[in-house]
Length: 210
Image 1: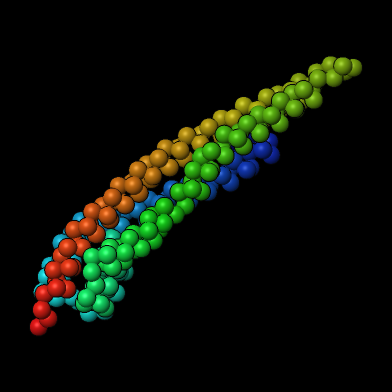
Image 2: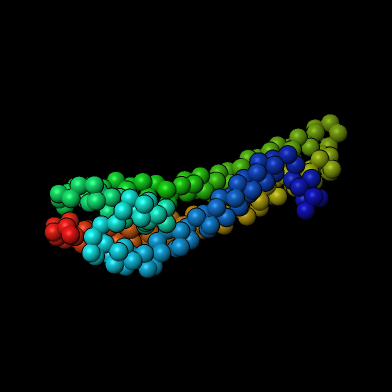
């Protein structure tokens, strides 16, 4: 590996930094987009059961908010209903939508950076290729002829950088598309969960308090 890096020349270093950044973002997104951190399967049912006979205390709502991304969205509606017993559908829907926008922004964090790296890696590889071609043409001298050592070095820079750029860009693009689809699915799940809880909260708010 060290010999390859030496043969590829200095243009390989931006690509190596790019690969480290891609790996870091992929690991971070894999960790953050786990179902238990975003939308636990049983959370909506637990919230419905919890609020069936009344709205919970602020402490319980705070724990729900810290549970997951879905918990934060559901907690926004529950908190609004608890603070204003006369809250209508429009008020509750606005609370859910505001929390949903914040949740979507949280889920999409670093995806633009990953997509940018996936697009930039081939360009960095192309830059290395151009530099290698300059080395090749620089090896041609009208007086002394070609310099085989410099010619081989230029070919190494051109080919290695092109290959490294593609090696980085292809997995980065695949992971970007995967995370993009995962986030879109989560956002739909958040919307459906909020729509399910909304009429339940209206019924609980309208019921007489004991």
